[in-house]
Amino acid sequence: MSRLPKGTRTIGGVEAERIERCRKTFFETFSAYGYVPFFPPGVQLLESMWEKFPSRFRKRLIPVYTPGGEVCCLRPDMTLAAVAYLSTHYSPQERPLRLCYAGPLYRAPIPPETDFERIQFGAELLGWEGEGADVEVTALLLRSLRQVGIHSPIVVLGHAGFLRERFSDLDRTAAAPLMQALLERRYDAYFHALENSGLSSESRKSLSTIPRLRGKPGSVLAEANRQFGKTPSLNDVALIVDELGELGLGENLRLDLALARELEYYSGPVFEIFSGNAGVSLGGGGRYDGLLEQCGIVGQAIGFGVDLKAVASLSGMEGGKRAVAWCGGLSPKVALERADDFISSGFRVELSWQANREGAIQLARTRGYCWWIDLPARTAFGLKNERQEIP
Amino acid sequence: MFTLCLPTGRVLEETIEVLEELDIPTGKLRDRGRALVIQDEGFRFLLAKPMDVPVYVHYGIADLALAGSDVIWESGASLVELRDTGRGVCRIVLAGPKKVAALFLGHESQLMGLRIATKYPRIAEEYFAERGIQVELVHLNGSIEMAPRLGLSDCIVDIVQTGSTLRANSLSVIAEIAPVSLRFVSSRKGLQLAWDVIEEIIGKFSPSKKAGDINEESL
Image 1 (cartoon, each protein chain N blue to C red):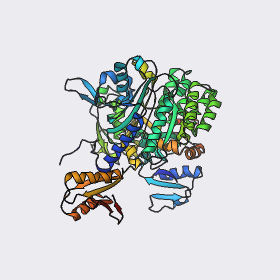
Image 2: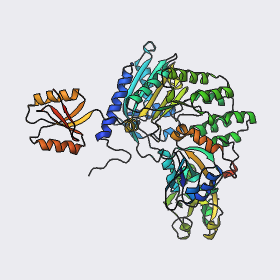
Image 3: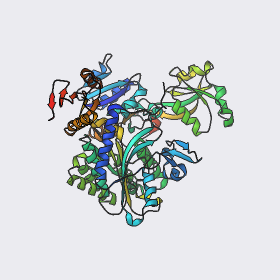
């Protein structure tokens, strides 16, 4: 019996089909808007990414040596590869660049999770310097989720700049533990750090509201504006909220102005995606202009990644009526042509070449299908007594 | 229905008291018999082993939970820590017999290879690793205090409340590792999708005593 490495698993059957359908739907949605596929290598040089990841993320990298003796890690993230690709393959005149990808990522799991491999779909819009990119990416993501059957996804929107604005006047010793606590979502520790920050009671009172700025956009923005005035980051958020509302996606939106993403290269709006049925976030993303700057590129960039396994498990995508099609002695040419007729009317057929009609029916039952097709008779029979004929 | 996960065992009584302070119905919880899932008015309570509470929260089964900070740290789970209740206060300590305690006053080279018995292998590993001390961990599930006496370990990492069990086993505290108390935790999903209820619940809470004498402003 062959064993799999701990933290990995083989995905097959209905789950694999759903993942593939979700991947296809996401690709179709994004490629219709000019996002081009992108296939970076499965390993990345450690030296080129080490400085760009925060220390607690570095601990999750999985190092390997290439046959050439170079120290690499299994690909933990696609964004760095996308930025490197942009900087080396496209001149400034060719920007913006829209990329999308699907593939495995590898990070040491955080308990109680045990898998270190995940399949991610993501998209990146790099090098656009005007408005619109945030809304475009978020709206397409929401549309894709709806198309795969997740009807009420919730995008939780925050802004990395909002937190920086709040902490910019504090000295580093006061700001660092506050930011750290928000990154780790330890609000208890946040209040503790605030209490011991040496700040005036007025500043503490104001900063203590941050972890409460969460919920429906209208009320959260009103409260944030009342507390902190109309800051650039709140204006950014308000713009996105308005635009997504115009697109009929307002119900899918929540704000969390204490939201800080794990990767610190985010510099503008950030978001996470939830569905009422899933325990953990399906994914997230945001604007990362600072990372572009580190690579010598001027402009904005926004991207996201979603866990395709998690999305597929919620999608319920079955992809048509599945059936075993009994060929009943027909030639392969005729059998395939007749099967095509059923496929074009919504069936997904698995051809059965066996001579025995009953054997084909039994195979359909074994597979858990609801239909079997008698190709010589051009008729589909429901295993629960339905019947459908194809002329 | 709003779901709360609560730890079973000796901390359950304090947990129920916290809920009562928050006007959450606890009648059926007190009269639970052997039930592990209890519904009372608009609440569903899940009773889980303390070490399992973070798992129920992480996977979104529970919207909110009460868990000890020792368990949260040991689980390594990425939870949202909302509020310190100031209840269930104790400490995680490194303790050992006097002879071993004396070693900790000298050079750390004398500590290399010490054998540590604990039911908190992650916490113990992080504590010693941060200090560059290589130790051998023995993972036990209970009665940790007897391990040094029987020669199974040199010292222990465990929680201590009054210290009487330590004294009864001729052990003394060598170092305080962290204060422990009961915390309100939620998942990232719970935080976002059940925030209205969570805010209402923890907003009512006024802590009586805090771990590590923390005096915090409330959410």
